[in-house]
Every structure is written in structure tokens, then in C-alpha cells.
Length: 357
Image (cartoon, rainbow, N blue to C red):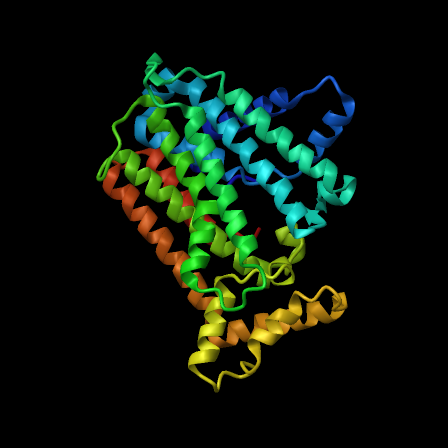
């Protein structure tokens, strides 16, 4: 499911064709002569939905460097778009193990189908192939001293892992502050989105620094990534399971405090008269109690979501996502001329806020 309006996909659906090429490269790179490996890889096909990260990379390249940029660097852009999708897929497979999730994209997760061991190894297989594919690219400009694309991607992957570890360290921390929350999602989600928007500049060799086009694109990607995660957090509380296509309520069940609940806790602490606010931390902690019957957890989770709605906590979290997208869009408008490529980025930003899955 693409996040871009059909009328913005370029002549003859250029963007759709480029993403289809990424999907073909993805499958070809992971093809094994061992059939059980191919079976596991086939499960990952269901994980791919919006292809946000490849779209960010390709749209940033188009916005900054136009058709001429694709003429000169299209192969590198395509390889890197495939690489970032592999890294992202690996994190999803591993996330499902960490969260003990059973459903993703309306189908069973790899860990639910084949167990944690197979899921962990499949995630590792995806990561190793991502760097194997990335190593096929020369350093930009052919200079020995030029930036190593593999090293840049590895650094972002390290940051994602640090974000996951930081989140694990704060599981069942019902006093998690917003500063730590934003540090977690900056690392685990926004860092890779920011890199996707920055990579075309590294390929082209565009100078980086404050006030440059690469800096504006990186800012766009990072802020969009944070907004995307906030919307994800909201959907985990209020989404329709059939539409979202994955297990809901996993954040509280795994002891993860997200922005909507941080907002609710702050409101309950500031205003003791918030209906249902008494003992809120205890009620949240109860969600993470593994002995709690599933139907009880679902009912109490719905009550907490209702309280977040009536208190204005959900609206406050949504407002934060709105502001991040507005700031990201302003950065792109100021740095890039009004071109079809820029229109794609701005359209993508708006759709992140309105998505239902």
C-alpha cells in the first residue's frame, strides 16, 4: 500500500515502477539454494506494506536532484532503497519476537509460525544481506577517502538497536518522562527515516552542514519518523485491528509507556479531578501482568483508551505529531524549489498523519 497519491507518482507511475523494482531486487538478493530459507523469506513478503523508507529515499533523490540525478545515480539509489528496506524488515521480525506479537499485516508473525529461533535467525539473515548488497556499491566519487555508505548505514542501524535497548531498559517504568520517550523513538524509528532522506546527498556528494539541502532533508525524515511513531502509538490504543492489521494493545501489555499515556499520566497528576485518574499507574502496570486474563486486559485497555480520549491526552499526542509534520514540511519548502519531487515529500508527510494502518 503506497503512501503517495497516484497523481504524484510521475509520468506513467514512475515512482510505483521504481518501488516495484526495489521489491524485485529485495527478492533476488535473499534467494537461497536452501528451500527452508526461501520459505522463511516468503513470510517476510507479508510484512512489507507502505514501503515508507524506500519511498523517502527515492522521493528525496527526486526532490533534490531531479531526473538528471536519477540518470546519473539511479542504480545506487535503487540499491540503497533495497538495503534500507531490508534493515527495516529485520527490525520488524526482531520486534515481533521482543513483543511476542502474533499478527502483522493480517497474518501470523514469523515467530508465531516458526518460533523465536527461526525468527531471530531470519532477522539476522536480512541484516547480513543488507550489508552484503550495500558492499556492492563503490565509495561515492570513487575516492578511497570518501564516505563509506555501508558505515553510514551501520551507524544508523546501531542507533536503532540502542533505541530498542533503551526502551527495554524502561519497560514497566510507569514514570517514564517525555524526554526519554522521544529519545527512544528518535533512535529506534526516526534515525533510519532521516538517513533515508540523507543517503541521496551522500551518493551525489552534496556538501552537508547547517542550512544545506541535505540537512533539510535529514530534518524532514527524522521529524516525519517521530510523527509516524506517535501515530503508531495512537493506533495501538484506538485503531481497528482489521484495518491496522497487527496485534493491538501490545505497548501496555509489554510495559511500554508511549506518548498518549504519558500525556494522560501528566493530566491525572496535575488535576486530581480527572475522572478515573486515581491509581492510574497501578492500572497501567496491571496491563503488563502476564497472569491477567486476555478478555480482562482488553476491557481495561479500552477503559484506559477512553480515559485518554476524554482527558485530551490523545488529542495532545496527535497535536504533537501534527506540529512535527508541519515543521518537517516547512524545512523542505524552505530548502527545495517547488517541483514534483518536493510535492511527493509534502504529500507523504500529510498521509503519515491520516493513515489508519
